Length: 313
Image (cartoon, rainbow, N blue to C red):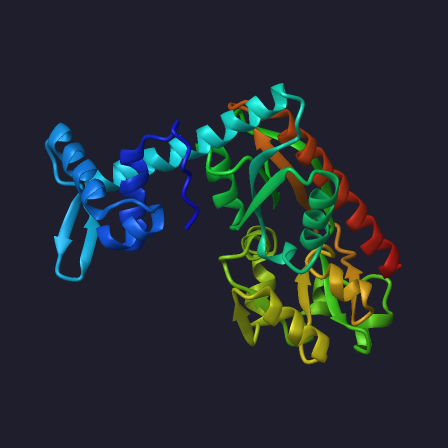
């Protein structure tokens, strides 16, 4: 657990967060390097001031009450706001330092994300990136409540509190192994796809909800022999030649680049593209370094996408 020891962060909230994370006063005392009695005294003072217990004291440890959960949320918001403020102060000093939280998708992990993290470390060594892998819905929620500073996600829609820094269309296509009978086709139709075993993503993934909205008949007719929330499993089955899949070229970027799969665009007129975008909150100010990194992320994803398309031609 990362503990913020700044004197600007109320120690009572720091101690409460440590006890909540580690489950006991003794473990928290070791984590924050202070006596257990001092932590216990701060928590008791909080409970006395609020008039409610913050922990259930159990034989095997301490568990937050509903009131304690509210205080923990306050501590987390305080920490996020403090990190942002400290980044702003560094900017006033002309130093590109700061901590930024990024929300990204699971399919980005073995795609463009490692290269982007390397670029940030090389071009902005004073920036600490914290990356959370979430769904699109969760990315939007965290942007709105201040849990993350920027996000890269599929099918982001402009909203009052959401500013799209960059976006690009992602045509829907069929992904097959390089030696698959469909691999030589320039385009395929959904009718072509249902003739082959389909590895379908579960509703946890955005692409499945997209397919249900736009092409629900396909999933009924195809009766996919596999439904999974793991994109990595889908890609493994496609590479083996046993299955085909419907997704975007960005989801299979590494496999297109190494030549193990082919992305074949759909020729159906009603096959609408998805999108990928980089977004920040429109309702909260972002440190200058945050906007610089957001622009760098947009440029990096765009360049990566172009390299994948070039390799697939």
